[in-house]
Image 1: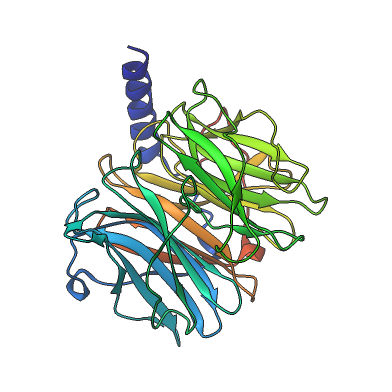
Image 2: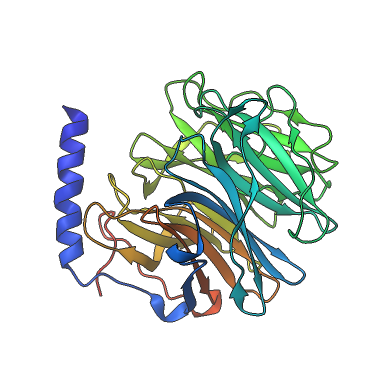
Amino acid sequence: MKKILLTLVSSLLFNFMYSQNLYKGDKCIVKSEFIYQLDDVKFPSCHASTIAEIKSGFIAAWFGGTAEKNPDVGIWVSRYLNGRWSRPYEAANGIRGDKRYPCWNPVIYNSGDEILLFYKVGPSPSEWWGELIISDDEGISWSMTHKLPEGIIGPVKNKPVLLKNNMLLCPSSTENEGWRVHMEMTSDNGVSWERTSALNDRSIAVIQPTILKYSSGKLQILCRSSQGKIFTSWSEDNGKSWTKLVPTSLPNPNSGIDAVTLRDYRQLVIYNHLIADRNMLNIAVSDDGINWKAAVLLENDVKGSEFSYPAVIESHDDKVHITYTWNRKLIKHVVIDPKLIETRSFKDGAWPVE
């Protein structure tokens, strides 16, 4: 009954918000485009994109196939060169012996000398395992796939963060014993690993953390949850231990999020500002990771539309690059100038109107 009431309230709230002149904050958007067109690819469905900067531009990846969970779902890659995205190609699939498994949630990381592409393979999130391929030519070609050690998933959805101690901190989670978040660490680009224990028990259902950094050295994670809010936790020892996960003021309709720490140490998160559904995609900004303000309305459409699973980075020229799922058919790329962001305060938790 509680879930039914929440869904009803969310639906009424969304219909009201969709009819209002919501604050867009779109003056900071300098580019908005699709990475590919439907005629360019063989797959009808896509999801879970990732993006990284390379010397020659950018590289993005996502999983695509007939539909999520289908064995024909592989990892597709496109490179952004001279202002244009290349035709996508399949960089990895789930063929293992005489069986093919679906692929999931790629995460790209540029180590400087190599491009690491983490992804998951398996019939479902409760049974998948982590794999890694590496490119030394900026994503033109890739190594043979390498299965990660037992108990290591790799970054489960969002990008890893390189710490001052040269440890690559990978935000991860599992779903085989409830939704549990943990951290994985590698100091040699995925050759050797260590990990923390789960940061939460089953009373708090969270997955897919994203990492924020502070000038003091403190770290923060924001997590997707099934409890109506984005949850957060803090670490003061380079991610080895974390405070108890608690809800933030930002809503979460059980959908993936991503966040980035800008060079001026503003924190930027991309998420669905809804309790249910995924038909609105938003950006909020904070100076302290606690008090958030509305920044940009990326998408807002009728119920049944889906804009989800964002990925976000800041490039060398201080622009913010975002990719996300557009109605499970396309991957959208949006570029923002963070110097032009104008924020508005939330009122009673609702996205502000003009």
